[in-house]
Image (cartoon, rainbow, N blue to C red; front, top):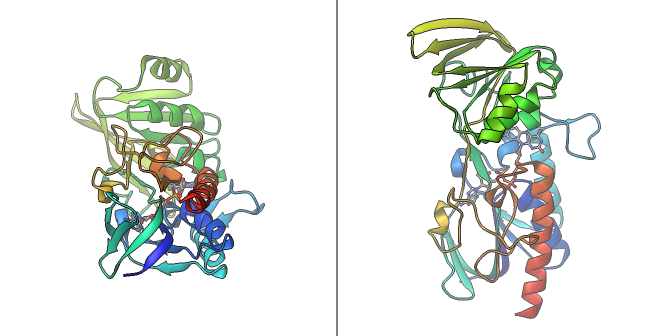
Length: 315
Ligand code: FAD
């Protein structure tokens, strides 16, 4: 059975940055990029978006899939061995650790988990892949809200928690109006976030409502909402709809061997990527429910590789 120095699990900016650093430190890393793991293509969440305009180095912007391809090419250039397989099992009960995919198993002296998170989306007609997804429908206001297509137009946010309030407030910088749609007649968000959103004259709450359909041609043009109390429908003009109903971190395969928070995100020692198990590091959205950006994922990927290198030289 192969014994690797470091096995990197994941394929977004965190995993590939870790691979670039580990490869250039002569650690000869192996990277498992997954095969539709968490329902997302190898390359991670950026494969699901169109323009990325906030990643430094690309002043004209770059498409999400092109950026992922560049990350991968840079890892490969320094000798990272990349397998298009999902890691299904790991055993952290002893060192070296054991790991397995459907195709192979092996041992690793250190592991970097960079398996990301998947943004949740409601299954609403018009919002699916191949319909208006990424043509006005998104799951990341901070990423996409500033795009020219949304400027000065009415927008929708779906959700009732803190992130929905935050995303709605953020979008008022660009939108003429932001409707927040929530199924219940009370929001789940903390009082302070609710009050801030309610005090914003550009935000209108549509409580006890559900989005029935998103309609348009090449891009979003209108949203059909259903009032759950009166059982009536309304059609409102809008250029975009943002789901803000949470994320699912891809941590199930860890099988409880690493400490997680109550939402399933990996807990790390603050200021580091160290998990509850010595020699296991976590980078990117799998351990970050606050920033969730490509650049922050890349930053923690770099930290994880440097910390793994330090760990390997000491053990
Ligand atoms: P992810 O990108 O989440 O990738 C993790 C990968 O690991 C996935 O491909 C998954 O399939 C794989 N994986 C999971 N489990 C396993 C396993 N067991 N074995 C092997 N592989 C596995 N950020 C920006 O900075 N700018 C933007 O413009 C931007 N736009 C966005 C638009 C949308 C619609 C979304 C959803 C997100 C956007 N983001 C943007 C956020 C950004 O995509 C994420 O913050 C970033 O991709 C997180 O990177 P990551 O490396 O943590 O992992």
